[in-house]
Amino acid sequence: MSKGSSSIVLNYHDSLLRTSDVRLLNDGRWLNDNLIGFMLEYYEYDKYEKYSKELLFINPSMVQLLKFSDEEFVTSLIECWDWDNRKLIFIPLNNNSSSTNSGGSHWSLLVINIGESKCYSFDSSRDINIESSQSLLQIINKALISKGYKDLKFVEGQCPQQINFSDCGVYVICIVDDICGRYARDTTDLKYLRDIKPDIKPQHAAEQRKHIKQLIQQLSVKKT
Image (cartoon, rainbow, N blue to C red; front, side, top):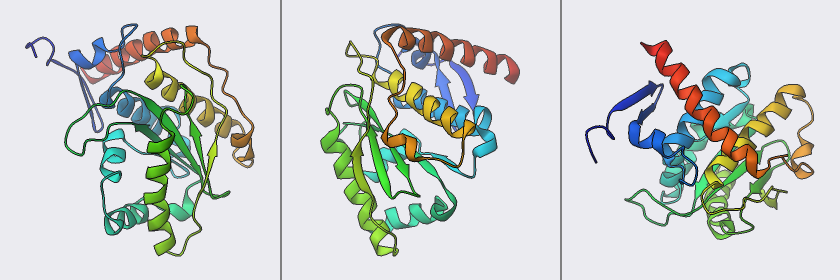
């Protein structure tokens, strides 16, 4: 990596973005853990901060750790998540099967609706991540049952479909924003998760890439 690529662009809460990360926002590039983690933190600490005690956003690096953790560790995490007081939990998931290296080829989103005891899967490329999603849910359910909670039922949500091989991460970010926006408008009725189909079209992905670039620039100016 060149010195320019490793230059720090933004230090935001637990996110550290470098020039190489920002370049992934160009059209045709696959978004990495750092960018998705940053946007989830932005939703948590800024855009939807008002609902921070009800909505929980799991960082992609933590999701990867969950996939290879034992029941005791997952149980301790659930305790830290303040499960009883949450309404929705957002889990960005990729199909990386390595416990030591970053990577993967596809992102999808799991949304846990605690009140319904359901886990909704939103996949912008049909069921590419269904095996990874169900495997992670089994790990979470095992820990939940050990703590006396009901296990979560897996539900495939309606999801707009990407038309290329690179926008899956952008779709995850858009869907999280869509669902959080609906929650902000009505915090009492969460059953819409089973019926909604987020209105995200291919052109929205390009617009979202530009929006994230602008957001990073704005936040970096505030930091200086």
